[in-house]
Amino acid sequence: MIFEKINTVPTSEELLNKSFRRATRAMSGKNITGRRTALEANESMMLTAANILTDNLKNIVRRFPTFENLPPFYYELADVIVGVDDMRKSLSRLDWASVKIHEIAREYVGRVRKSNDPLPVRKQCFGRISSIIYSIDKDLLFLNQARNKLRKLPTVSDEPTIVVAGYPNIGKSSFVTKVTGATPEIAPYPFTTKGVSIGHFFVENERYQVMDTPGLLDRPMSERNEIELQAITALKNLDAVVLFIIDASETCGYEIEDQKRMLEEVRREFKLPVLVVGNKADLPEFKDLDFVDMKMSTATNEGVSEVTSILIEMVKKAIQEKELIKEKEEMETDDL
Image 1 (spheres, rainbow, N blue to C red):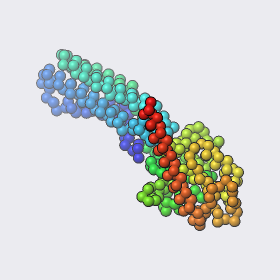
Image 2 (image 1 turned 45 degrees about the horizontal axis):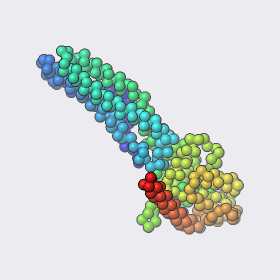
Image 3 (image 1 turned 30 degrees about the vertical axis):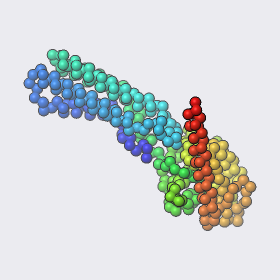
Image 4 (image 1 turned 180 degrees about the vertical axis):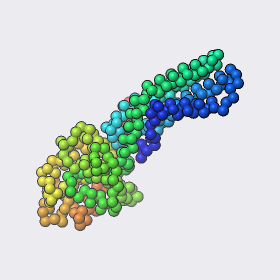
C-alpha cells in the first residue's frame, strides 16, 4: 500500500523533548575542566539537538509520497480526503524548518567559539530552534491527521479492473464471488461505512481485479454531495470497465426505470466502457429488456462465464486504446 510507509508524525513538543534529551545525553559524562571543554560541550549539545530535529523533519517529508508520481486514482482520493496542495504546503514548511534549524545551529556554533560564557549562547540557540519548531506545530498536526486518513485507503492494484455497479440486492456481491472463486476482501473506502469489496482472478497469467462498491455505486448520483462524487469518480482513473447489473425481475425492490436512470448517470459520470447485464434470468419474473447487452443468473451460474469473457475483452480493448492515446500525445509533445 502506497501510504503504509508514513510513520506517525510527532508533535512539536515531542520533537523538542527528544532533541533536547539527546543533547543533554551528549553532554553528560564529559569532564568539563575549563573554557575549552565547556565550549566543546555546548557546541556538541547544539549540534546534537539540531541534527535530531533536521533528521526527523527530513524523514517525515521523505516518507510522504511524491504526489506527482502517485497513480491518478490515489492522487484524486488523497486530494478529496485531505487536499494535496495543503499537504505540499505543510511538507514544504517542514523542509524550510529543517534547513533553518541547521543554519541556526551553525551560526551559534560560531558564536560559542567566540564567547567567554557559552551557556547564554546555547540557551539563545535553543530558544530560536524552539520557535522554529513551534511555528510548524499546525503543519505537524495536519500531516499526522492526513497520514491517519491516507493509511485507511483501500489497496487497489494498478491492473485491469471490472467495477460492478447497480442498485442493492441485484447480485453484485454474488457475481464477484462467482468470478473470483472466493469471498472478496473488504477494504475501507472514503465516504462509505461498508467498504469496497475486491476480488481477483487470473486468465492466461493476467490478473484481473473485480470491485463492488456498496454504498457508492448503488444509488442515484443526485443523492450525493460534491465530495462523494469526487471520491466515486476517482475510480475512472483505473484501467477499468463497468459492469452495470440490472435486476430484470424487479425482485430487488427497484423498478426497471429507476435502474435505467442510474445506468445513464453512471455512463455520463464515468466515461468508461459499460456492459449492461440483466441478472436473475432464472426467475419467472425476468423481463427481456432492449437496453440490456447480456443476461445471466448468479444464482445458477447461467451466463456468468460468458459475461466475464466479454468484460475481459472490453478491458483489454480499453487499455489498448488508452495506450494509443498516450503514445499519440507523447508524439505530439515531441513535435512541439
